[in-house]
Image (tube, rainbow, N blue to C red; front, side, top):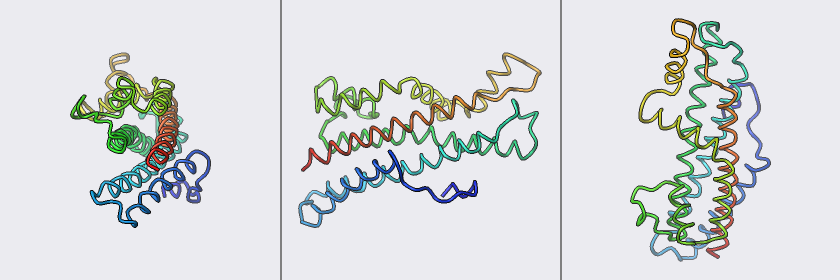
Length: 233
């Protein structure tokens, strides 16, 4: 959908995105078959089916936000808003919108995946922490040695992408709990060069961090849904 902003054709599913969609659709189809066969007396399979399709929709929204953020970032050439034309400033504000939408969705998707795994695999992470995150689910699996093959694979991805996830988490927490992240960047820059035009944040680094988080999420979703589908058969 957002590719039309850049005069491009709609996305074609290829590579890892195609693989993720395949895994989630296969899981959802399995749930649908069992529901149709009357095997969902407690309505849990329908919850799993809806949760899986919801994760696929959320991933689509993240991918579009990343694509748009990257596209607008490539249009930004000036080091500060003060040096930009009106149109360039609009491109910057569009970048900020889609970048922010992206890094907030990163952790929303991970927490949805954590909730799905906790319920589908009966991990009972809520006994460790009533309000838990994806990372709490991983810690619960690791400490209690639950589903060790899945646990090891997801932990490996978490460690591989720890640096970009940590940076995105800081920005998410600032945005949600303190102030707009772009204003925080302005504040930090003002301390260094008070009275001078405020330099922009490192947009190239921010796009790279979002790209790496997207890689981590798509890989984690593939592994998780493939495992759960086989475990439920």
